[in-house]
Every structure is written in structure tokens, then in C-alpha cells.
Image (cartoon, rainbow, N blue to C red):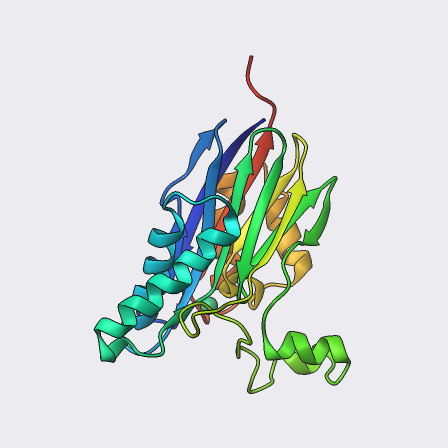
Amino acid sequence: MNIVWAVATHQGRIRTNNEDSVFPASSGRSGEPTVLMVADGMGGHAAGEIASRLAIAAAGRDASDPAERVTAANLAIIEHARTDPGLAGMGTTLTLTEFDPEGSFRFAHVGDSRAYLIHAGDLLQLTVDHTVMAEYLRTGSISPEEVATHPQRSMLTRALGLLPDVEVDAFDVPVAPGDRLLLCSDGVSSMLSEEEIRLQLARPSPEEAAWGLVDEANRAGGHDNITAVVIDVVATPR
Ligand code: MG
């Protein structure tokens, strides 16, 4: 199997810089094992941007599996923060997938960036958000309607760069030609409903879908940095 992907990232309409990082940096096509990822940095001044870039750089180096990539990213941020006290407390999410041309994606994930699968027109969220709100929702102590305005709505329970030991969610997803995947930062998923996301993902090309998500998130207010990677699974060309 091959993949064709498109990358779209934008600072949004409120923020003055883009602390999201994305890999690959541009759209492309591959029939080889390929790593794709989205990181959403946090921290004062430029620290969030540095954290998400460090994560992508470290996770892109050789590793035996996706979870090891995320673990390496965590340690790289902690190491770097040690060298500059001004960067103390910086952190990032990292949602990473490694395409296996045999027909699957291997995921490793920490934070509240997300991965979705579109299969036969249905949208399925593959990742769990590591947020206080997701915990409250699981235990039923809050309603979905209350989440949108809750003061702790963006508080993470897990992120990279904070502790040397980080729990990484790792899982494999088998795919078939015709499937489409989305990796995105919360600038997409907090601004758009699942139905709005599904509608944009129904656009013909990955490029149109990725930029459609960015445009819609901006139209909805663009409160945060917005990043989308749309990946189409296609049959190997003969
Ligand atoms: Mg964000």
C-alpha cells in the first residue's frame, strides 16, 4: 500500500505565533515506512514552539518503534530545558503514526492532539485525550455541554517534557485502500464538531480536506493554532 498526505498548519486568528509543529513539513507520497506527526507545544514566550519542534526532531530519529520515538522526544525536551532555566516547564503533546506499507499504522500518543480514521464514511476517533475534561467525562462528573466553557478545559493530564517517565498510548490500526486518516491539534477539534470534521474530510483530495479544516476552524473563531495532516491510503501503483 501507498499513502498520499497533505499538511496544513496556521497560527489561527488570536495567537501571534504558531506553537504547533508538524512532520513531514510538506505534502507528499510514499510506499515506504513513513512517520507522520503533530505536536502542540505549551509554555511561556517561545517555549511552546521550542518544545514541539524538539519533540518532532527527536521523534524523527531512528527508533525501534513508535512508543520509543515518543519517549525519546520526552527526554530531549527535558534535557534542553535543563540547559536554559527560561524554558523550564515547557511541554508538548505528540501524536505520531508510522505507516507500514503491509497495511497498517502504528500509533504512539501523549496529550490532546488527535488521530481519526475515516472508514466507509464513518469517523472514528482513534486517540484518547489526556485531559482533565476527558477524565471527568469518563467518570460522568460533567456533561459534554459543560466541557466547552469549563475553566480547566485545556488542562492536560499527560504531556511530554514534564517528567522523565511518561506513559505512552501505543496501538496499531489496520487499514485498506480508500481509508483516510487525520492527525490534528486541538485547534481543529476544539473549534469544530465531529460532523464538521467529517464534512471536511469528505472533500476529494487530502490537500482540500486539510486546508478545509484549517479554513473552517478559522471561520469558527480560530482561537488556537490549527494543524491538520490528512493521509489517504491508496493501492500500490503497478
Ligand atoms: Mg492547541
